[in-house]
Length: 613
Image 1 (cartoon, rainbow, N blue to C red):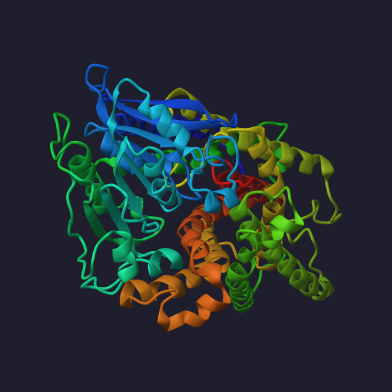
Image 2 (image 1 turned 30 degrees about the vertical axis):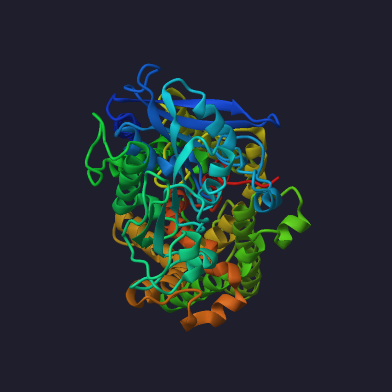
């Protein structure tokens, strides 16, 4: 394939401009187009751990005009920027906002002490350190502080009023535990489709809301209680409200109603019902534009891999990496659909079975004490199990196909159609090329994170700098099972055993191959998503309800975190497999795509999410 270096360079420049514009727009939205100063603060806790937080200070907040403030806490698998919708909208309405990374998350140090979190009412993962710092700031009205948190952050939020009784005047729980009657001015944002059994069973789930005496008691109310109705008084701290949000647990912070409810609650509890000069009607929100621009930076950076790869392959040094696609073997239409369907079913079956090993106190943490990222453990188990099963099946299949003259060259593994041997020089250049491409993405994204504070992301920690050497260590640990998966399932199987035919044009081939790859690799996960959510969304029945109690009993954890993660993994894999397909077609070998996609997926998984002590 002849490379037009000039066209690729122009395309790269255009993409860089688009990404830069999107990052600047995201920054402008985050800062309220100049009305809010956004900065990163680092605070040392009593144990010497550094708690990193993002501070949103309206420029009207000064020592002579202190404003009420809110501590905005993220959930278990998240970091401070996942709570961005609340931070952005609060700050542009005249609230100082501090969004910390909990210990073991994002840029903060330490590590989550899981036992201490459950047993110690004063352990709030560094959020108490962040709140203490916030109270001392001269531009903060320390007598009017609100705390809010999603999921794990909400469980931390109910602890803070007891630690700061003179300061905290409002609590907003987002898809979390109920709390208790003593909490000041409590608002609960309840996800109708919450995946977590503990959160669901303690919450009012039917209308009229007269079925949960436990929940009503936690709120200091007597049933019956109505959704979206305010009880009590803000003046004496007894105000109570339960707002029902038609969304699942994870995506609740991205809902207009969630944000609007919180905004008005903080106005009533912290500002005496007066909005002030910066007040904006609560439903007039702009945070989603930041998420959209963030998605453009994320996807755009992946797209830059195409011209950067082409430019490097146009050099004399890297040119040998671009090998022709072996054309002697193509799976028949019937065989392809059979192989793809079997692979899809295997992935679907293994997802709920293997990810369980990433659970709290799961076997992987016992077997490998250095594997401290809980969710990454579950994904690693899934990758490894899939690779083992696929490799065993490939061995039996290939043993028969060898009799028909099929070779490892036809599988995209070896070099030289006649010699059928490895070329370690080309393979070494392939590894070097993958390293350069990864570092291009990492440094390019990091440049914007350092200069204007914008990460390339959408609703989840994706492209961000590693905050410590420990996270780099985790990257290499979890890269191993990911690489096995993308070499075997995403290599030997997809582009060897299940090799597809070429279509009339290269473009049609790329898109048709990608669609078929998605069927073979992602459909099993999508079927699980449908099984978990369609009964809920369409008929009100879901995991943990009476209709499928047997499922809850047999795979308890799968009714909570792991179906929730499908909202992340399914779109992520769909996008990454497009690039995986392109890398194989560009090089004729399974290696560059496996190296790149394994590295990207592992980067997303380890750069910002939780690790345990």
